Amino acid sequence: MGYLAQAAALLIEILCGLLAGLFVLRALLQWARANFHNPISQFFYRATNPVLMPLRRVLPPWRGLDLAALLVALVICALKVWLLAALGGMLLGPIASAVLGSAALLDLLLYLFFWLILVRVVASFFATDTYHPVFPLLMQLTEPVLAPLRRWLPALGPFDLSPLLATLLILLAQVLLVAPLQDLGIQLARG
Image 1 (tube, rainbow, N blue to C red):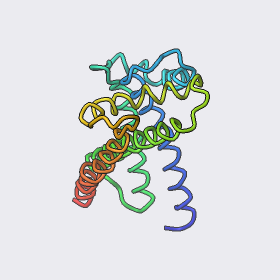
Image 2 (tube, rainbow, N blue to C red):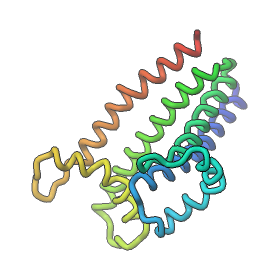
Image 3 (cartoon, rainbow, N blue to C red):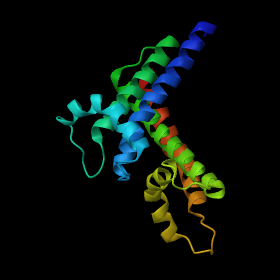
Image 4 (tube, helix red, strand yellow):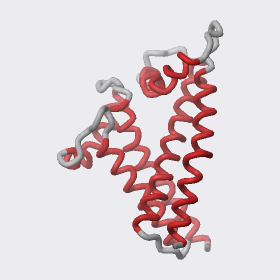
């Protein structure tokens, strides 16, 4: 792959990652029932509404999951995989693109949770202004993942081990779920 193709691949990775991340975060905000009036939430709602509102007529939310946002993120991830493969000289079929796009979407979701939890932990050490809109949003996005883990873990006084267990489970999910899904997509692509 030449320098120009590498630059194009980098741009595709970044642009598709940002776009898919935008829609995944929108779905996470709705799933976590984050404060709609938070200015950061408002940004995500306003940025994604032009695409999601028409799509929601056909694909409404289901049990707190914004299926339209997840579908758009999946399409973006599948397009990213297809474009990167085309840059490498390989044309993927629709099934291989969908499987590899699903793996990329799951990887993005796990990656986002990993960083959200990490930022929450670091912010808990240095947070002086907890009224900033980021802190309540971090709590609302990560609490649905951390709260069930907290119930399983023994209480150790002021120490909360749920972020540690959550990050371990995220890393295991990347190895046990994302990697086999990627391998399946590669096998489908090779025929």
